[in-house]
Image (cartoon, rainbow over all chains, first blue to last red; front, side):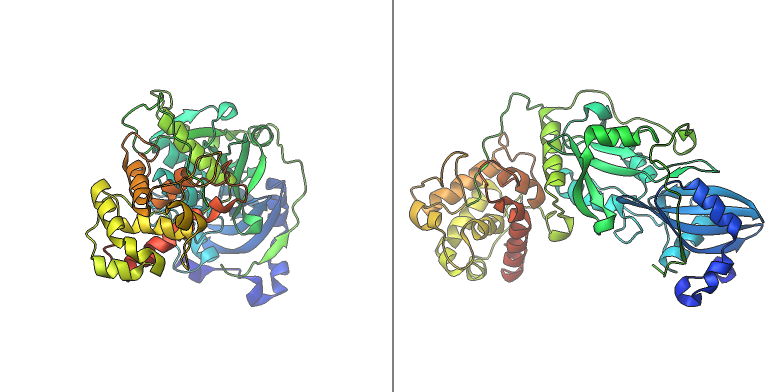
Length: 257
Length: 212
């Protein structure tokens, strides 16, 4: 088993020894690769001929995971980074043992990021898809299967949805800023938000347990994110959309007394 | 999650990075782009937008329960499950549900939310309004009888060309029947409508043996 080959463990097990165990070169690499936010180191495991290091990142309202491969003493590359392991690139088919080992190191023995899921798991480092599903499922009857921005993007591209220009996104559009990384960095954790009725974007804030908040105006958010990633916009089709009711007007809703 | 190993102090560079190559992160693609959004698509978008702006989260609160379709209801157990002041109208809920193909428990759950569980509201007692129906610019509407108000609500809920034609779950119904942030809700009470109705609905079905 991969985790039997763990070479580092969590602080709560070994306390101050951890500081000495983290290679200085790794710290330097990660600090250079992740230019923004807080980085937490969770440990490493070996899989010949490499060693893999697992980190979590917190960047403003976002959280994410980062996997770094150490090929020899001072050669590091970013293997993947996103809001969840469940959308990591799969190097060995449908069930990459390296990503599974990384996810299990972080989340425990039972975690399988590639388990077939109809709905994104609420138990994740950053349950972004599950947070969005709280809105999408009751209103649109549609559920995301992934918590990773790349998985969310895939789900929406395959969904019954319109592509929309982010700058012109109508209320209720979902904007996805996919996580971005290069092998030597930089690493930027992506996110997904919903455009509100006031042309502001709303999303879960994982500094506050995933509570939904207004994050920025649409314009501000796009300015901050379009320069680091390719923001995509989607508007889900209505669930029962067999007729165009463009001439139809919804009556005033009854008042709640 | 296991305990963290170490917090590394990341250098605080500007969030906006320059010169990033984003070609290696995902394979681009596009959604279905064959037409423009219809009025229904935009209406659903507005529901999502209001839900996001209102900080609502519903899936875990039973908001995905479907309310369409009449469910055969044992009148005695249904009546016993209702608050005392609603019990004389049990037959009306069942009949309206059957006539308009709606679960009677949903109609009763709306009354419980609109009029209360411990006693009737002013509108219920003085305007025969059991369902919280009111125009945007006025108080609760007058009905000739409680039966009339229940049937009126059931009729508009079931109208295939009406406002609720695309609402199948309580969560969807919430954002049409009692939308958070509505102009006629100055005290923001609509914010709790969906979860409350979902809870009343679940409780009624449990108490009445699942049939409503």
